[in-house]
Length: 130
Image 1 (cartoon, rainbow, N blue to C red):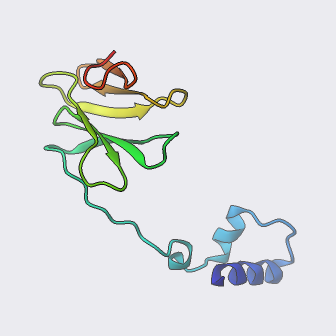
Image 2: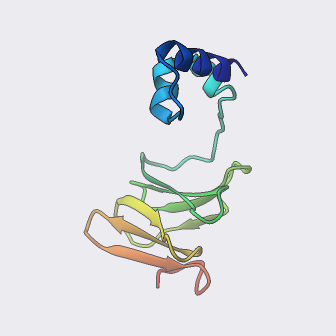
Image 3: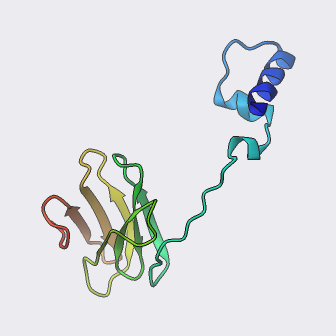
């Protein structure tokens, strides 16, 4: 409630804007702890190399993918600590990025340092790219 009061006070002092937009809230400078009061901290089973890409599912908000220089893609659930699935599309490759399809919930792509794009459709196969 403190954030609301601070923004309302700022708007009144400034001259009574009729609409409150995100820049207005930012200009009111509320305490950041009031905006983000509950930090999220979780530990997940780690890759063997640096994580180079992360993609959150646009359909199931709890799911996210990570890819790493260890050559693997991992599918995680926010509520679990171990990956639900692990994919290793190539041999001796770094995976540079991973991205969910914005149109199909079970499809994602990853790209390697050799310029190869691997497409996965989890409805077709949970182990090999399409």
